[in-house]
Image (tube, rainbow, N blue to C red; front, side, top):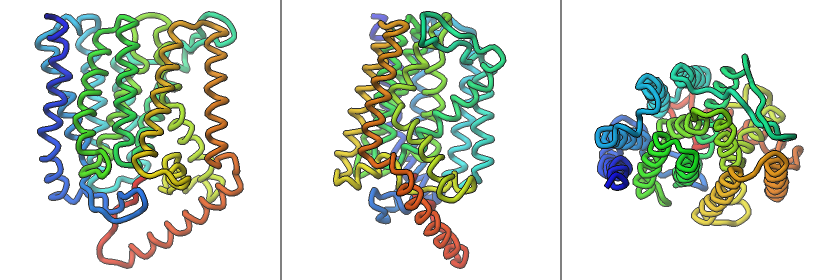
Length: 382
């Protein structure tokens, strides 16, 4: 009976998202929150954003219902803990909604993300230990715990945001990540975090119905930033010493490709035109490269789903490895990713910088043209 009650939150989350998302389409169209260049090949489609609002409502109502029918699940930590996490989620959602409506300047967007991360830290979330890959044991971070946690939450949030460039991509990968985190939390004995991950996963499953190619609505920054925030917080959740280590390796493995893509994005944009271009959008991400190799939209998305699932299995394997075993697994994954990135052409830095420079100049020209027109265009999807 209790097992059935635990399903209340996830089921309600899925149902709420399915019911609310059509309404969010109309709201987005009425408020002008529309991505006018959301096609995988740059075609104009006029797809509404703000899908993240529906996902948030599903998550919030699902967890509220779960807490009502199974209150003991959340007794392991104080109410203040999850309250501060919820504050951070609200902040991240608000930043995303404002950006979907008005295209926030990068500095204000980043300020909002750090504010959300600080709220999570206030609630007790922090990376206090990291693994010692050379021998069994943990390395305390001490004064570095807070800044590293801030960077971690903001990094994961932006990695998901950058990944949201094809229909269903960020939603599906987020769903797979939630499944991985749910399994890990159950194994570790963290039922509250497992319930949060499962509820978010079901909310994403409901949204994927509308977001699968051809999408009728996008997550928008409201959804991708919220998703990244929750995944980042869940990944460092744990009450036992060393649990942070286990879950910290999960997003590093399961989100290894998008996180590395984020790092490569920063490097190539700086190489092409300096620090000022880091926030510029382009079509040089992993999913764009797969399209260039001849894969169609759905096959490219399913390929990245498969990669994420395989890395999720590797993350689960970490639970049963120690010391040298963990090191070997990380090395194997790193080598495999290196081979994939080489196949995608990311190791040809001169070509990457040249292409990035060309796309940056094209964007500058387009922005100049837009300034001469009475109506502004929506930024292309990342």
